Length: 87
Image (cartoon, rainbow, N blue to C red; front, side):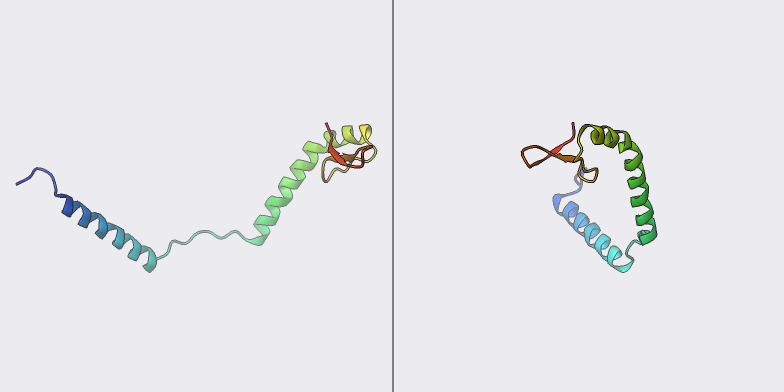
């Protein structure tokens, strides 16, 4: 008798485990907590608020340097007619 399992028995055991796991997942799918629309909107609003306060000083600087500065894009209209990032 061998002290270790044969390759055939390892393959059979692995295949059985894979099939059993697939069947168990199909029988009882895991429930994941759903995000509500309100939670997503609240998170987006919080990120927007943080960006607004973090970028306010930068926007003030760019407004003082470039009259055509657009805070939505972070760019200004150059003399060449193209938009450039505020630096």
